[in-house]
Length: 234
Image 1 (cartoon, rainbow, N blue to C red):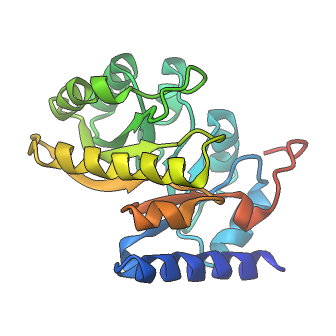
Image 2: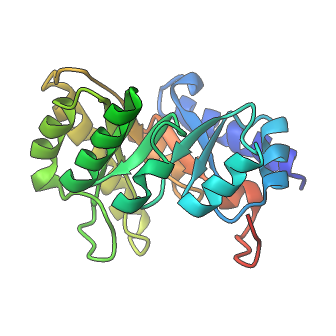
């Protein structure tokens, strides 16, 4: 199956999952996760219909930007972001999906203010409370949301999560349902300068379940590009 055919198939499955959940397909946006892909492959994906690319690694993102690989598509940063890499990301992406600490929030605000722009962000929740993952725990979520909403150079757009990889289908569905509940609760707070309209969850193996529980963004890599080849260079 060609790259274009895989992209079309993923879009068809997203639409089918949305309809099955009683939603409009237009309510769900595909972000093509471009981790370890080459610039040429990214260009091919955009030519085949990808409208948003999601990058996990700052070094790869910077290399692709230098080669203008994302031309014609929006760019999101979806991976773990270190504070010392913030300057390489702010203003270069439409959305930072992975803000999971006050320290990172403060650094993004500092850089955005210095550059005279407003950076859209999502708060990442460590929904499975895994020690190996970044993100804020659900109990600490609302203080972080309040801090984010108070920043003049940030725009809080919603939440993101990655459920535990070893969770079974029922457990994963419960994690997604919990995320939907948290977004609804956050939206009800009516934070200043916030627009809580994005729920980013679901990847290649579980995006249908995520859509059923209210995902507005799904981040899909393997189902589009195949198994990742970590020997590839940016």
